[in-house]
Image (cartoon, one colour):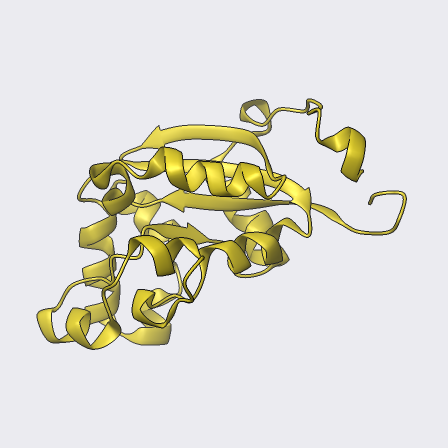
Length: 168
């Protein structure tokens, strides 16, 4: 907690294979840093079937095998950049910056609204995952579980930024 009661949180962000392949990683990362979110962990990973199943453990149950299989194929098609971001209300802040899950519904000014355009109907009709550039933890409990899945304590760093002098 900060002195004013706002929670300092950590959340997981994955820059998906489409963000890596399109060369948008730097621009997306800049959006998070501009919002005073601090990178406390990062690594590039090529997801295997085991990590994909652990990360998307409930996707098949919630949306069916077709959605899980399309997502797994997509997420294993190239490397992802995994990030742990820290900041005041980090989970909500990241979700706001990322925008709606479906890029065609994402507001201009959000990452998905500015860099993606695919919609659910197109993806479903073609049996593919929605290429939406970014995964962001949906809530604080999910963020804690996902950070622990992707990073060990030794891979996460404590340090101060110049901006923290003004916001914490």
